[in-house]
Length: 205
Ligand SMILES: C[S@@+](CC[C@H](N)C(=O)[O-])C[C@H]1O[C@@H](n2cnc3c(N)ncnc32)[C@H](O)[C@@H]1O
Image 1 (cartoon, rainbow, N blue to C red):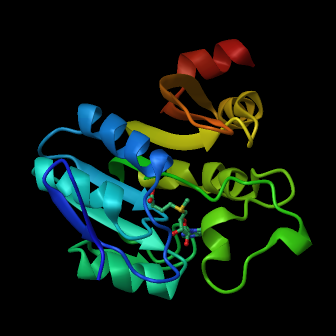
Image 2: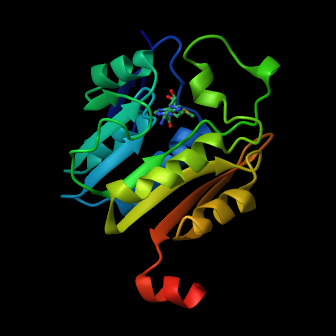
């Protein structure tokens, strides 16, 4: 069994579950700078639970994760994460709203013949433009975020950073890039999104 260690967190990897990579590390390190003790945090698409485990190992927080893949949900559970195996936010209806909602989505533009077999496809396949799950996430996230809550969204230059920021803003949020990492074939960024307040919304209308 392979285990990785990062910032006091020990995380076991599992076959057919997304192995934490540069995107996971960038999101975990950025979230750790912002999340404080006492907060309620939701991670959508937790995978192995790596990002959540880093937060839990360093902060006294309440955290829940979701993942659509049963293999990922079981791996995250073995890493100590309270996880619900579900599509995006489904099954969280009765729960409280969160201070932070974080998501490292499947963000690669993917055609039919680029899909990989099995549950691992959900880790990569962002639909033809790479933004399918981001759109679905932005349509639903409002109901799960406190009025002053913050979204942290990891995306790649391959996804179209400007297009994602437009999508975020059209959903009624401000968006700004708060962290970047240049990798071999892509640039990764963390977008921070906050609800635009009522007067700003009125002004824009
Ligand atoms: C790029 S991986 C990120 C995994 C982990 N958060 C990390 O940073 O290492 C995306 C994850 O989102 C999950 N996922 C994809 N679509 C989902 C959906 N509709 N609802 C919940 N999880 C989803 C995948 O199964 C995968 O574990």
